[in-house]
Image (tube, rainbow, N blue to C red):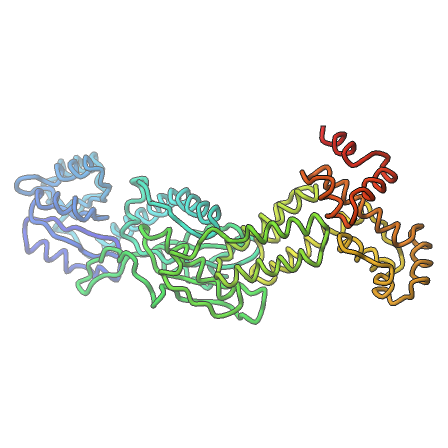
Length: 503
C-alpha cells in the first residue's frame, strides 16, 4: 500500500483525519504520526512515506520548512498541506516549494481528501512504473551471466539508481515460462495482472520471465512490513500454473516469491523449476542443489569424440555421442538454458568443421522439451554429414547401392570385404559388383579406395598426423601401399600434397 505520514500538533485534529477514511480500502495506510515538524522530519527520513499530510503552522519547524528539509534530503514525498482560513500566504509558499495541494481544515471531508489522494495515487503509480524501466539493464546483466555460465549465477547487486529505491520495499513474484518462439503475455501465463501494481516482461532463448511487483503485506495494524527477504511460497519457493503436460507444445509457467535483493538467485531457481516440464518427469531440486548445481559441464571428452566421428563422417556414432551428452545433462538436471547453450556450441562446432555457414539456431532457443531438442540437433548434424558426403560421393538411383556407399563412408577405416558389402545389400558378390559398376562406373573396392584417399586428403590439410598415422586412420594397412595409391590417384605424394595445401 501507499504510505502516509500524518503531521498535526493538535491531537484531536490528527485523530479526526485518521478516522476520516478507511485507508486500506483505498490503497493507503498510515505508517506514522507526528505532533511537530522535528518529529515529522525524523519520521520522513525513516519511513520515506509516499504522502505527507501536514499542518502548515506548527511549533518549532513549521510545514513549509519541513517540506524544504524533505526535499533537501532527496525524498519525493507528496505533501498535502492543511491550512486555516487566514493562512493562504503560507499555502502559496507551500505550492512554490512543491506541495501537491493545500486543503482547508474547516472544510475538509472524506470526498475532498479522497479526491486528492486518488490523483496522488495515479501519479505515484505512473512514477513507479516509469522508474521500473531502470531495472531492465539489471535484468539483462543477470540473464547474460546465467546464459554465459550455462546456469549458475555469482551476480552481486551493485548500487542501483535512486529512482528504484522504492522497489526494495516491494514484493516481487517471479514467473518463468517456456514459451518457444516469441514473447508471451501475462494472460498466456495465467497471471492476473490486476493483482499487481504492474508486470514487467523479459524474453530470451525461448523463455519469458514476468516480474510481478506488488506491495508487501501489511501487519495487523495495517502497517506495511518490509519485504521479507528470501520469503518463499512453499517448501522450495515455487508454485505452479501449467497447461497439460500431455501436449509437448504446451506452455509451462512457474512462479516464486522474491524481492529485489534476492532477484538473481530466485530467478535462477525459477529457471530450474522448469526442469519438470523440460525433462517431462518429476524432478525436485532444493535450494542447496540449485546453488551447487552448475559445475563446468563435463562434456569435453564426449565433445572430442563427436568431433572425431564427425570428421570421419560417421553419422551413427555421432548420434550415439549426442545421446550420451543429452543423457548426461538429464542426469545432472541441467537447466534448459545450459542444455540450449550446449546445443548451440555443438552445432556451431560441427558447422565450422563442415565449412558451412553459421546460423542463429532459432529452433534451439524455441525448444521446450529436452528430447525434442536432441532430435533437432541429431537432424541437423545428420543433414550436414550427408551434405558433406554428397560433395564427393555420387549417390545413385539404386537404394541398395546407396546403402553400400553409405556404409563405406561410415566405416572406411575398417577392413571392409566385398562379401560384407554384398551381405549388406542382400546380393551375392558377383551381382553386387555388376550392379555397383553399372551405377557408379567403379568396382566396390575402387570406390572404397577413392573414399579413403579423399579422407586422407582432408586429414593432410586439417591435421598434424604423420603420413603413417593418416594411412592407418583411413583404412590402409600399409603406409607404402597408401603412398603408392595416393600418388596414382592424386598425382603427387601425400607429403607433397600437404606442403602444397598448407602454404
